[in-house]
Image (cartoon, rainbow, N blue to C red):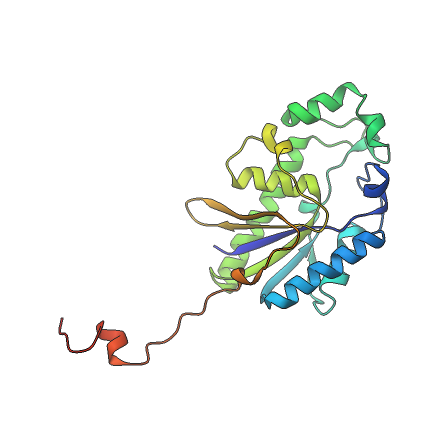
Length: 232
């Protein structure tokens, strides 16, 4: 199957102030913009032939991609990898939310957490839709571009952590042990038997190892026959 680079958006104004953004249309701050440009430099240096780029519909992901991949115009938007719907928690300071009884559930038993309010989503539903979206894209691109294709999806911290947990065969209740920083790159390769997490929370590494290898055609009889002077 193909290889997916999961990019978290750059730092936002709410990340910097310790507020739970949720689905609010917040943008990147100066640090986040610099982070997005730095990711773009890494991608350009690696010369990755991206078969597709998929984004959460929220502005912070779209802005990250516009800075990181300004020449990539054919970006697909997928609601499946949009941020968790935090309901009535949206827009509130994290230090205030940490005093709520639900906070302990979110941290220790997230598979049972359901965020309050009519717009609130459960973390189990969030995980299921995000994993389904990534696996569907991966299967589609494998069919259309071949098993060596590389693609990128820009999403959010909890979304990427849930996808990583699934790829590692971890229960969702353990996903808070995974760190995914703003503008970090996490790399997963899916195969028919299992998935492999090749990079996690990478904020500066060389991405060129993920350029697909092109098989070279044999150039001599020796290459075909296994060596000179011998017979089979």
